[in-house]
Length: 102
Image (cartoon, rainbow, N blue to C red; front, side, top):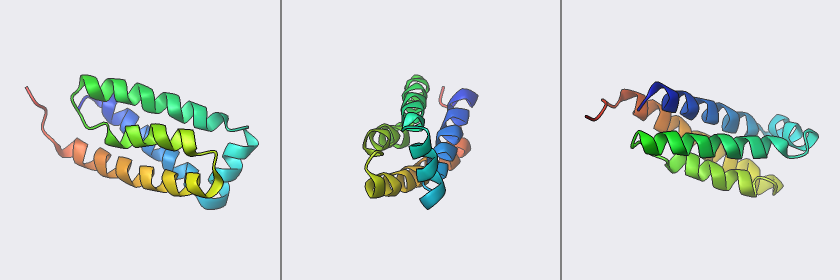
């Protein structure tokens, strides 16, 4: 995985983890008129493009796209952000340990 892909994986993880904080994440999203969900969606799509180029796992970021779309539903969004953050964390950690393919 390239450095750009790793960075995008960690950034999207951090965003999803922040959104998963029960009151703080929800208040941030609502106070900005759901714009953070749109930004997260774009970041997940950009990450998917880079990850496909690197032939790396896109499961976490694909889940992030779905999460950004259903994140407007309060409780469902909170649960999905938490699940997505965990999946992205696992992928970021295991992706950093893999050796590059030639």
